[in-house]
Amino acid sequence: MNHFLLLGMSVLATTVGLYLIPFCKTATVLIAMMSVFGVSFGSLDTGANVLILALWGDKGAPHMQALHFSFALGAFLAPLLAKLAWGTTTSAQNHTETDSVPLVLNGSSGATSDSLFAVPEDMTLLWTYAFIGTYVLVVSVFLFGLFCKKSSRQKKSMASVQEARRAKYHWALLCLLFLFFFFYVGAEVTYGSYIFSFATTHVGMEESEAAGLNSVFWGTFAACRGLAIVFATLLQPGTMIVLSNIGSLVSTFFLVLFHKTPLCLWIATSVYGASLATTFPSGVSWIEQYTTLTGKSTAFFVIGGTLGEMAIPAVIGIFQGHYPELPIVLYICLASAISTAVLFPVMYKLATLPL
Image (cartoon, rainbow, N blue to C red):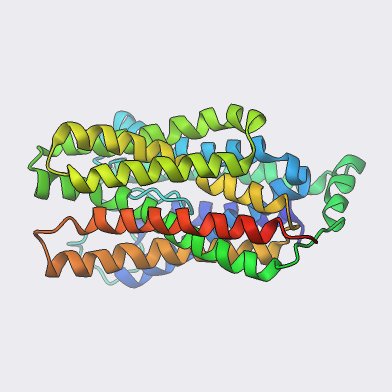
């Protein structure tokens, strides 16, 4: 499919879901709406990365960083803006590499009507969703406008993707990248999801302080993605991945050793958020230097990231329930940092073998 058409349809589906979620009165309908989000987010996450590569190829590292910075900024700001504007009780938690999670639903569960849809009792909820849905609708209009504009420059850019190069171990590289993103995205989601509960339960922080710790993680994450737009013009993607891996290893190591020390928790959390920030866009830009990515190959390793996002937090939840006295979250994050640090040199060796 045309890239702009696919992205426009995905964003339009997101708009429909945002408009309908506040009216959902049963779990079945809400699940259906969230499934629409899942499909549209999956298409957006893959399609946007492929579009950047199609337009700029292996010269698109700054553009790739800018794309993922916009995600991080939205994940950090959207709940804060909603709370300021309408007084909703959302927090900047559970925002991941592959989603911009809709705001928490606090609809009228006590209604006795059998209808599937109804106006919610909390009108601030309705206006919050309507506002964000309208913003997303405007974005879809721009994407459909780009689809309708058939400029020669656009055709030339899209045609350039046909000039393919292929590494000697193309599929082996993609499989390793699949595993790389499985551990990376899983660790990112895990820490962002569990750090609030960990700080209150294991460290004994107040809820307000733990919420601040969560904001520090996502704030440094977003800030470093913004700085990475500049860094990507000066450093190779591989160099940025190595620096990110070192930062993740050091910060998670100190988190495991000194997880009971609040000061260390604050410092290591900020370093960890900064270290995770550039890994995903740098990984996509790095692999494009050695083998041309198509929509199918990009979707393949993005699936690795989404599987990690789904599986690792669930596994941690199970183990944490069995061993509540252990910092399972930090152990898994350290193990993930070690895994990515080991996988990247192997990928680099395979990628640099003769074509």
